[in-house]
Amino acid sequence: MYHMNSYPYPDYRPAREGTVTVQGEGIATAKPDVVVLTIGVMTEDNNVKAAQEENALRSNALLQALQTLGIQEKDIQTLSYTITPEYDYKDGVSSLRGYRVEHLYEVTVLNVQKAGEVYDAAIGAGANIARDLTFRVSDPGLYYEQALTRAVLNAQEKAKTVAEALHVNINPIPVSIVEEGGSAPQPLVGYAAAQPKAVTPIAPGELTVTVRVQGVFMYM
Image (cartoon, rainbow, N blue to C red; front, side):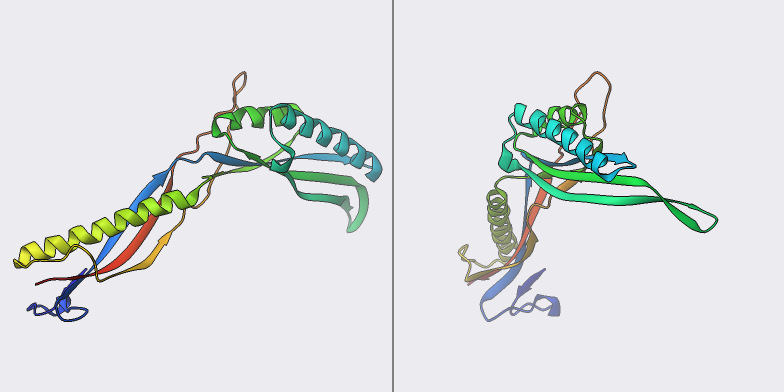
């Protein structure tokens, strides 16, 4: 939308005398370089201690497999650890069947290309819970700045187009630039599809950053 004073149509009212106001939009795309896996171990037994001990053994094997692949300890965090009693119901009466123990981890992989290998190693080491994958960028500010630069240039181009249409001279340096809104790179959620005898394919796709600005330019 454009606004210019002394223009015969009401939709082009100026922000002030001798100025034109335009909106600019800039978009930048980023290829994720970080993937976060949610994986874990679930064990069941009619004895709660036995379920816990088995879970601990398999969880330790999982952690060892991840560290062998180069995943640092700081990039492995426990999301939850739960012990849930399980019941059978018959004729309105419940009876304790056993216990389910779940230990969920959030694993940050700093190399997207290695994510499939990490996922497969986790499953091979005993992980039997695999939730979503979240793709991120390690430096989101870089892509936001790219989108902001493009939004400002887009505003300048629009102001120039309006000025040329009305045969006036415009100062390309704006009187003011105000960010109207935008979006930082939002994490993408995906899923791994296991394939036999092959590394699980992980397709990160792209993240999009959008920035909108309002620019006020003077003309003569």
